[in-house]
Length: 190
Image 1 (cartoon, rainbow, N blue to C red):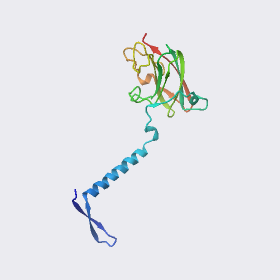
Image 2 (image 1 turned 180 degrees about the vertical axis):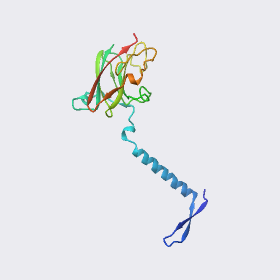
Image 3 (image 1 turned 60 degrees about the vertical axis):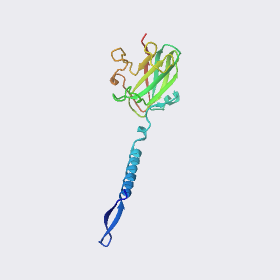
Image 4 (image 1 turned 90 degrees about the horizontal axis):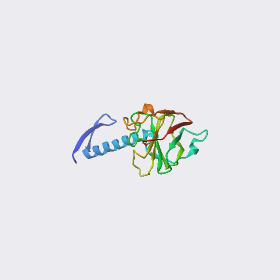
């Protein structure tokens, strides 16, 4: 690695001058250039793309007050019991992100109340989104198909053939710059 290479450089008087440069110096320079380019690429990435997924937030209804937004006021009806937790997750309204593991944008999880519950889910910007809600009736953090409930924006049919995962085209809705409102119905197996 200590090998030296000759590099010629033209001086202002027109004569060439030989410089000896080690390979180690060249590699160090290339490494520094690579780090600088990687840093510049990270800085050019929009802030929304960095850390935009998996945001656990509280159910702050003030974010759905008149004049606020962008946000979605989600009313979930038909919650069977006041046991366990209800979780509401916001996804982008794209096939690639809908119900994909770890691709939810915002999640609100609160103790369940029987009947109806309302959530305020902020959205990053106006656009196409989908909501999935789940009632983890025993609060164990696992899906117990015989006892837990599920709901999705636009209330699509959920059956054994789609295994509770209807296509995004059946759940997608548009959110504007203000506060949009949707109502979804919790569904249970039994």
